[in-house]
Image (cartoon, rainbow, N blue to C red; front, side, top):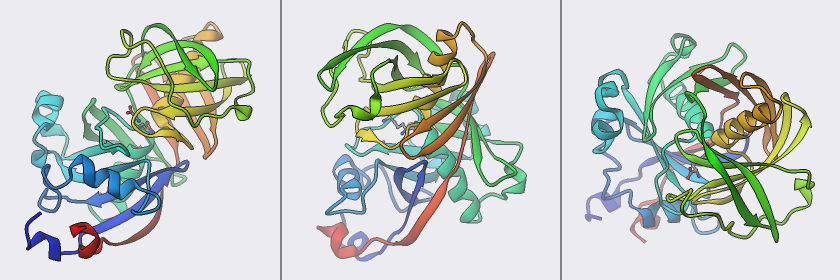
Length: 295
Ligand SMILES: N[C@@H](CCC[C@H](N)C(=O)O)C(=O)O
């Protein structure tokens, strides 16, 4: 970092979606956090719950034209996506998609005065590394995102908490193994790292353990996320779990309520779309101390 950049205090926000929490870095014009500054080491420091701010990940709020890999991941949709959700997991890795993060992302655009809330009720296209996603505001203060279709790509097994869990491999842009189980998920110790089939999931996987409360309509979920560990919620994981619950009930369409440790999400599956709806909450806003950044 240059001597000059180490003396400025960049703005930072903390927020969450159903307690899946993020350090948010406003950077509309890409001038504050260029790629080489926001590297994996800094992301890990920011997400550190003792020596940093703490979070399951980082969201950089930036215009797509300032993101070097945006043309590759968005193609001709680049021109339709003014904004790009530059998401990082707590371990510094990038992910294709983040369902809780993208609702918070839109909430930040609205609260920062970069988008008009009423205007985004119909939805705006936001760029992500998984492609463009339509995100919008609900009349009751929440947010929705259409993830596109859930894509099944087989079945697999994850080993965690000393047990083997079988599930459906589902892509929501990012990879998931949604495991419906009769084991009481509340009783499990999910502090370990899951093992899984690297052939099926070469880029790693988010593992959802799901208890069905009402077939095809209501589940509860715990999740161990790729690049993070257990989190209080995962939006894309809720979509994968909702889809798997519908399939198990012999259906491919419907609305599933998904209870997560951090709250409740709704997942509406229809041909060609998976709409996730839930809250987004901003907790605080401030600045990063130059001394900490320089450290
Ligand atoms: N918590 C997110 C998913 C974040 C990315 C995930 N850990 C991955 O690596 O795919 C969500 O709400 O979807």
